[in-house]
Length: 52
Image 1 (cartoon, rainbow, N blue to C red):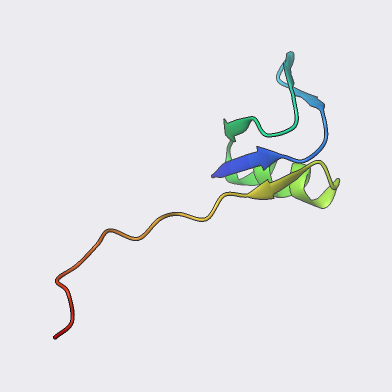
Image 2 (tube, helix red, strand yellow):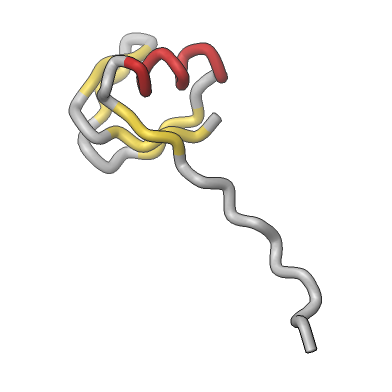
């Protein structure tokens, strides 16, 4: 799960600043989101065929 820091935090002995994108496990990502220090980064959909 990719998350973006919205507040500074430390995870796995690493410090992250606001705006940093972190690749965290689902459990860790959900926990950090619940703590109010991160938000999930939306996964960009691959572009398909253009609609006519």
